[in-house]
Length: 175
Image (cartoon, rainbow, N blue to C red; front, side, top):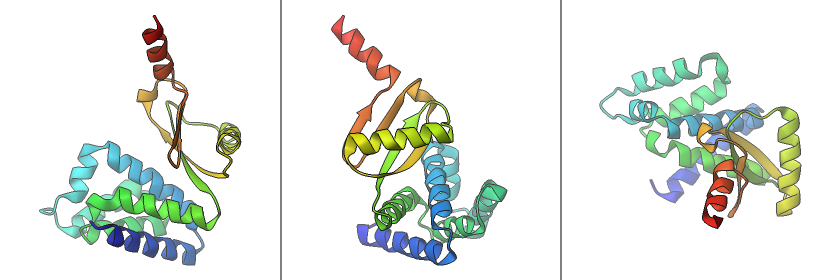
């Protein structure tokens, strides 16, 4: 899909969530849904298969999100899936997250780690990334077991890789 269409969908989703007064919560839920969508071939195939009727794909979204997401989040994802734009869902959501962050004068910081972080760890990590980049950040944590240990943080074009895997690779190359 063209950038203009992606931005159009992102702007519409942003305005709906903001009008509902649930922008922060919806933004976080959509971000997590997009990462799940990207990492699951079965989910991606089920929601993008044009031979499956739109109402059935929307039903999958409803049952998948259930009580784990706000009604607004479920409706927004269902709208995108129902309109046949499921393949573009991660791009649309990433654009919405960036738009929401800009509206708060924040930079999106996507952090990948092996385990879920506590609220205290998230707060300290956000402060450390803000200190390292000179920008206040909107922290988005993705649990990725392939990281093994440590974190990989992406803030704009800056990547800070503090993973065990990278350190082992560096040690291996030195030996």
